[in-house]
Image (tube, rainbow, N blue to C red):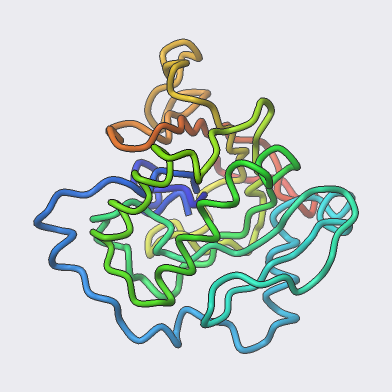
Length: 234
C-alpha cells in the first residue's frame, strides 16, 4: 500500500497495505469525495512508465502494470514475472488522514508475487470503492468486514513491495522522501519482534497506531533509487 500517515512525508505510505483502516468518526465524517479528475493521469503511457519506476528495470520491465481509471485499476501491460507495478494515490493513505484527498500524490509501487496475490486485492478494491463514491467511513467498515470474512487474504510469506521511484510525490514537504522496501506480515508477529519503531529506526513500523488492520507493514530504507542513483541526504 501507500506509505501512510506514520511516514515522514505525511502520506503514506503512499502503502500500504492495509493501513487504510484508521480514522475517528469526526475526521471521517468530515471527508467527502471530490471531483476525481485530478487524480487520474490522461497519458496512460506516462502512468505505465511511472509505475515501472518503482523498481529496477530488471524487475519492473517484466511486471504486470495497472493504471487507474474511473472504474478502478485496470491492466495496461501484461507481465511474465508475477510482479505488479501501479501508482497509488492519496486515498490509499489512512482513513482520516488530512492528506487523504491530496490530488498530487503519486506513489509508484511494485509488488512481488506473494504481495500481488495477498496485498493487491485490498488495494484494488479501495480504488474501486473510491471511484464508486463510497465514503471513507464506509470504506473502513467494508475493509474490516472483508478481512474478517477472508475476502481479503492475509499477507503471504515473503510479501513485499518496492518503492524506489525517484519520481514519487508523497507530500507537500519532502515529496520524494527516500527509497524503501515495504514488507508485510500478520500482526500476530508484533513490530517489536523486528525492533521496528519510528522514522529514525533502521526498520520503521508503518502500522503504528493502527488498531483496525490485521496487517503489519514494515518500511526498510535503502541506499539508492530504482535508476541506480544514490539517495543523497537520506
